[in-house]
Image 1 (spheres, rainbow over the protein chains, first blue to last red):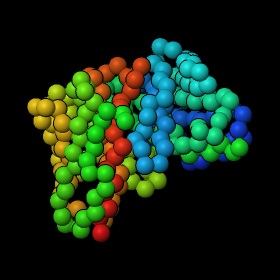
Image 2 (image 1 turned 90 degrees about the vertical axis):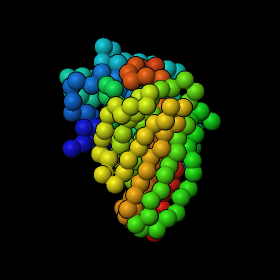
Image 3 (image 1 turned 120 degrees about the vertical axis):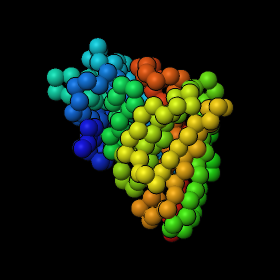
Image 4 (image 1 turned 60 degrees about the horizontal axis):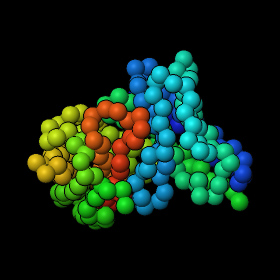
Length: 109
Length: 116
């Protein structure tokens, strides 16, 4: 059973445009929602998070949106930069995190 | 350097063998988590330890076991290895058992296990 789904395995975006990564989850009891970024040969690194009491959290170029009724999480990156090319994982949970399968984002210069 | 140290970085072994993966958490973190990432798959949660005690168990095979020692480092033991066990194994740590809102987990760079 996949509790967390990232339906787009890959995404290509022109440099300077907006990148939107999506994530759907099934359990309405989750309290925390996070995004991680992963470069090849490295472990995932924490990017941004949001708790269930909020619907938006912004940190510089990165904004996470939470739609609890739709059980949907999204990450917006604007403007996109070549260094943003990586695999992005969403993660949801309470005491432990369940990760999605990841979306490979490629920023085209 | 994330502060979470995993050794070895690479491991090649034969089917049927046993290996031990080691993880030293970030200084001050009491929780250790083990995840498996197979080819083109997401991160599958295996097991969590908090301050020496098992806290949560995920999709961990019976052939796999883990422990956390008094100095808080953790070891993941994989036995009777099969070709399908080839994967990246990540360790992560966090200060406690909740409160991801500001920092999430800190991951190590992983151990790549290849079973031949």
